[in-house]
Amino acid sequence: MTRIEPAPDLLIFDLDGTLVDSQEQIARSFNVALCAAGAALVEHERVYAMIGLPLIHMFSQVLPELQLHLVPACIELYRADYNTIEIPRSFAFPGVRETLIACHAAGRTLTVATTKGQVVADMVIDIAGLRPYFAHVLGGDRVPHHKPAPDLVLLTLELTGLPPERALVVGDSSYDMLMASSAGVASCGVTYGAQSAEALRSSGAIHLINSMPELLPLIGVNG
Image (cartoon, rainbow, N blue to C red; front, top):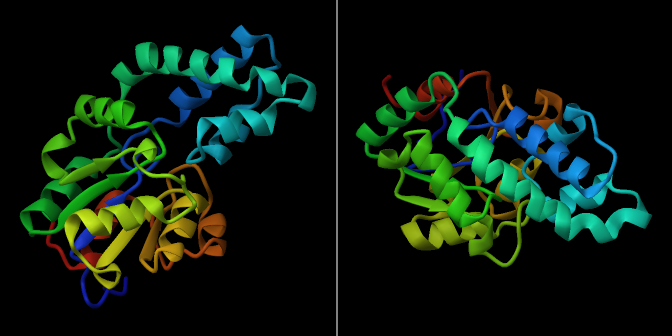
């Protein structure tokens, strides 16, 4: 694996599918909401492919035109189920905590950039036990435009005072890769999340890893 030079000082992590194994949780709550609203259920794989987008976009993509008026209700139903039932089940992928510990000990600045709302993002990070390692956790409602717009990365750069050429976005979706390239930041796709290696490459991933610990040699940190 070719090491990134210069090594990034700032690591910007996506949350769902990158740090936390939440695909099934999101898909379950998504279908709970559709069912409660009187709409047809969808295959979990279809939900996985949309993870990283705001809920309004996700529900708008699966509801037929005659049921688009149900989108606001679906969002509320989703949040009620996810926040109450699924968040308490949140856990980090294998190797994530150990990787964050090593990066933090090496003096790297670690942040989170997620389309989840700020309150929910904070809850997930806390329940997964990852809070001590992050300088900033930024939810999608902290910026005007969601992924794949660059807003979350640009706000992170502003808050940390670090330049884009010393940053690396780590995520599992094309939305993360596009967000990074739009902000002029390098990207690393993780292949164990919502989207395939091919989808990550085609959306601009510069590096790919198959597990979170593989990030360490890539950025020059000893595990």
